[in-house]
Amino acid sequence: MIFALAATLALAAQHGGFATDRETLSSYMRQSCQFQQARDQGGEPADYAAFCSCLDAELAGQSGDTMYRVMALGSQGAIGEDALVDDPAAALAEAQRLVDTAPEEERAALPLLLQSSLGTCMPAMPEQAVSAE
Image 1 (tube, rainbow, N blue to C red):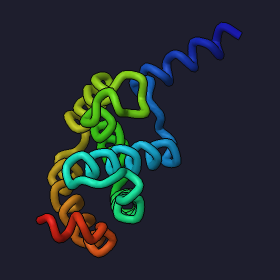
Image 2 (cartoon, one colour; image 1 turned 60 degrees about the vertical axis):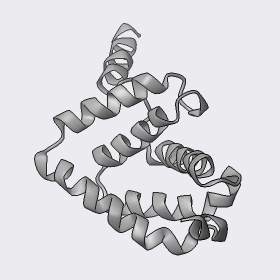
Image 3 (cartoon, helix red, strand yellow; image 1 turned 90 degrees about the horizontal axis):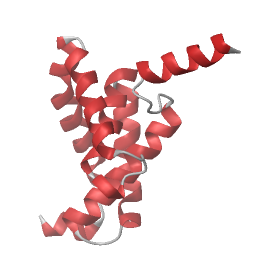
Image 4 (cartoon, rainbow, N blue to C red; image 1 turned 90 degrees about the vertical axis):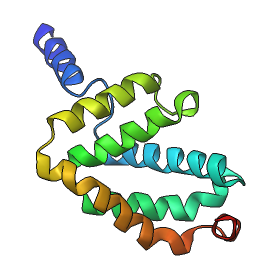
């Protein structure tokens, strides 16, 4: 019993207390994307469901577990009080910790991965957002 509790606490500390499963991380990615797009481009978060689902699928398919987690937690931290996580600042700090400890080649690949994924998903962007640019 004590060993199980100690193992659980050690695992939680190792992962910063945040989710590591892709299903939860995907929900973080889609929710924060929809919120940010609605805030920045106008409209309602639901207007961006197709775009954000595409973006999430592209990023999930092209990144390893650590970098996908970085993006998911970082995006939750970026939207603050509207985040699904209880402590957005801690999520952002965990994302930064993960980036700081990731191999250089993974960090260097992140901007290109984001750019490529955005380009792939632009056709799914709602008409009003594309015409506003």
